[in-house]
Image 1 (cartoon, one colour):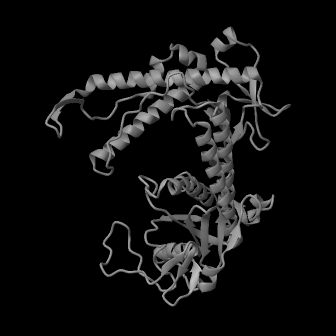
Image 2 (image 1 turned 30 degrees about the horizontal axis):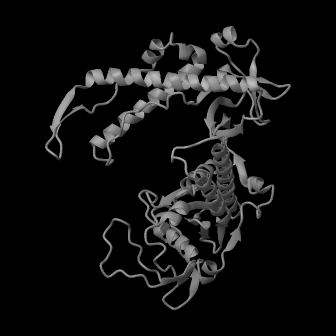
Image 3 (image 1 turned 60 degrees about the vertical axis):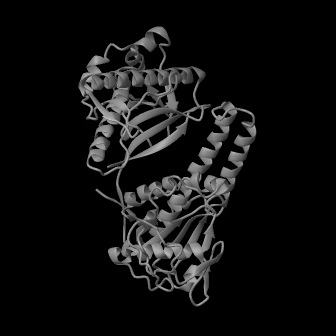
Length: 459
């Protein structure tokens, strides 16, 4: 069994009373988080001890010693059992918030150990406090949920304080027809862009694709105007168009800049929340559709491998100019990569992530050597071809091919020996005229079901 999530917008789809209760509980969850973090931090500081040292300016500094945080979930629950924020949330909901606090400190302990061992460069920071008066997500576990089969809504549990001081009637949120009491795992309530959302986490049976050929692969090169350029070892290529995503992102930034003109950088209001909400929904829709297109393409052609070119920390300290930075950094490429990986693993397709250094400069048709970024590049290394204009690559013999398709083919070449791939079918014709898909208009309404006949349930 595996878990999947369905995200539902609650704002506008629930009663005003239900919305007020959920917002109030988000406030209480925020206060409970801050209180629990304060207790754990203070207990930790009391046992740390102080170390003294001279900094680079020869000034004496005093600092708490770096050590792992000792924290116990059972002890934290016992300590906060009588806390008013815990009681307003209810026992099970309050426990979920405390579990999140415990997980945050356990993650800090693991990162601190990695820092001690030299595996990471920057020292991690202790989990900090959330914004005072803000909203924090919380969840209802499956055992506390009941489904109203008449109207298809989830009945949410109420704490004794809410029943005594607020309402006695049950309140509910909408559901979907493929999630019921048998497969629900939990319901998460969280705020985003001034709106309330619910995430329904549910169990699904694992699926395995039938007849996949693991000697074949699809190489993916992410970009901006071309969101994804893909080349397969079967001798096919295509591009997932990114112009509309880039245009929507640019329009969003123009509207925000114009609206905030003369205001402080931290100014925010409901209009900006609505703009950000619309942009976020469009990006999320595009990412999901593009990822589904890739998976369905592999199922249709029985391709067993997906190779994704990725530059680690490529967006960190990026300096391409203000306009290019805006276009490059704000496109959610990492989210697309992770979504493709999730869908691929759910149907048995192998996902491989490889660094993409020098794949755009090197000529695939001329079999240029592909050095590894950060490694020892030969002093005499020089690419056989070059980019003559945007999107066009010229090989040593003067042949013109698509520059992004050339990069995707080189990404395949980086792992061809490792995965045992044959690249004989990837020729000039494949790299010259890739087919272009627009996820907002080119895909049919039933594209999600494409290739499902090749899936077999795993018992």
